[in-house]
Image (cartoon, rainbow, N blue to C red; front, side, top):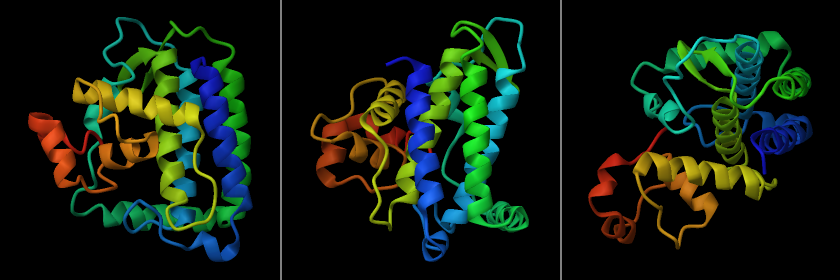
Length: 219
């Protein structure tokens, strides 16, 4: 599956989920510590808007980041990140709550997919001070969407991300590790344990050997 098709799947699934959440579900905790669904929804909206800007920001080469190395800068929240959460919640509230955020997310992600279809995978763009190929940018968006989809459904009886986006998460995590993840992990387990959302078991640590020191691979 191409990067554009993977992103279409990931965005479509997330958009449907956000639009279907009830008022009660809006305030349930997610897999992001301290974040409710409304907070995470606004974060996802902001990321879609960033993607739209990135796809319209061509850059001179060479690329300095790819789909794997992009994630080396992202680690679990540090002390003091409560300020970021508070600012996010205020912004989400100003937007009109989750129903409005969900509608704007659907609108923004549709625009991202149109923009992605107008450029070549090998074209270079700039985002967050880094230069990468469009194909690599789209991979980062798929991974972001799939991991946060898992966060959203952590305490919900709702479907998680599809097989394609989850397989892309696994591919990126294996790249960060420098080798394959345990075969006995399904792709959901790989995503949760690889990003520190689920603790490694003693058996995991034994199997991973020295590689365990790299966990979480990103957060």
